[in-house]
Amino acid sequence: MSQIVLRGNSPVFASDLKQLGHVFFPGEEIAVLTPSGDGVVPMLSAAWLVDLEAVPSGLTWRVSVRAQGPGGSTCEAASLEQGAAESPRTFEHRLRRLAKGLLIDALAPLVGFRPGWGILTGVRPTKLVHQMLDEGVPDPFDLLTREYRLSPEKASLVTGVARLQRPYLNQDPRAISLYVGIPFCPSICSFCSFSIYPINEHKGQVSPFLAALGREMEIVGEAIRELGLRVQTLYFGGGTPTSPRDEDFAWMLRKADETLLKGQSPAEYTVEAGRPETFTRAKLDAMAAAGVTRVSVNPQTTVQATLMHLGRIHTVEKFYRAYDLVRSHSHPFVVNTDIIIGLPGEGPDEVTYTLNDMRRLAPDNLTVHTLAIKRGSKLHQQEGAAAEALRALTPTEAEQLVREAADTARTMGQHPYYLYRQKFMVGSLENVGYSRPGKESLYNIQMMEERQTVVGLGGGATSKWYKPLGGNRGWLLKAPDNPNEPLAYTERAEALARRKAAELRLLYEGDSVVEWPR
Image (cartoon, rainbow, N blue to C red; front, side):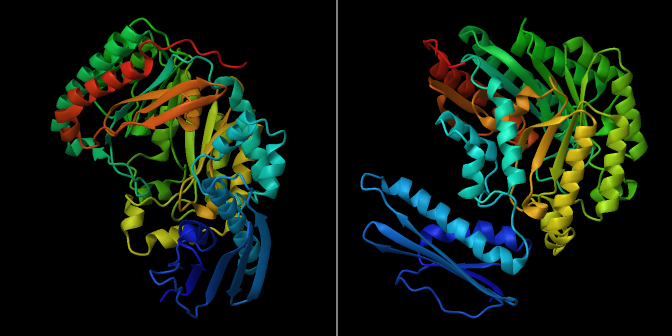
């Protein structure tokens, strides 16, 4: 039996216990127990034992959390009254929120760690703040720190990001974003969970894939023109979209211009080139000719030993050369670089080394990721590697490095403009995009906040249909993903494209103009 046991007196608490258990005990085996069919929760002994109980008395519920660990025990309790007209679902949300807050209050002093994000475990904490602002909450900061248990630092970060994003959201009900996924890479990194295909091992699938992608572009592009939709952003991602040969890459961009854009000039056009070994002058010339405005050159780290350990086949010198190639081009590309804190084998010294390189290079955007152990990654599949990676940095060390990265961005004149979180992150922290004023990635904002339709084309791409309803309200539906595997995509691309076109017509045909508040 696990030495960490979390028990609840109702199945409604099971997922909350599991999620917060992994926050407090990263990489450890955790047993979550709730009543079985006979209503009995097993009685056990363990090194760590947490009991969560919610007991009603009329409309008032008493919630308590008792935690016991090697260093002692704690107990936290509070009462919650159900409104006479309150729906069961709304009350359940409030009950679970209170229980999670008490769980943090009880465990934090025993574990010696208080999660900065409090009870929030979801991917998009900014959506909560936007919802509060939509509802007229005067001070989200106060609510986040008090009820959601966020630290003042994280509450300031998420409210600041949300307020910066507000002018970019809900501007035009007929504006859309486009994402094109290219599922090929030079190699597969140990931390990557995407279904990616090393291009040298799948050369024979590239041409059929591109032909299918071209057909999908034609069908979706026709629907865009029919419906009078405006393409605000176009984003080539993957994978590594610059993996194909120079001529194939240039063809993709021309095809997108002839079909998806057809005379439109998006406010932002991004190529997440990513891997430095795929950069060539010819590809940059093709991007400039196509009107690409933003390019990502992603080292993840500038420590050579780490790159070799990750399975990346480029050197640090190749990253420097690729970065200089973009910066020296006559076209005024906005440049983003990505780094990751918590990579296997890296401690504070290695992260500081990479941050010093970022200061020297001074990109327009710096995206700071915290390592997340994803189920499909090699790290997750290697016995013991996931737990080792999650525990390599203490929460205090990870938090300090995140602060150091934020300081680095500030010295370059950048501010945080979007953020998101993932499960099983080092230090239970966050990923943050920093930008110089006016250089924010519109696609990143729209994709993360989900207040605009995003049409996904290519391998593994996801589409999100958004219907504005007025008053900052909307209806969101996530469409089925395109297949990741190139052959499966090639076989189904046309049928999937026709389905997307039909759904776009249902969403936008005869649509009345929606007046959005300014």
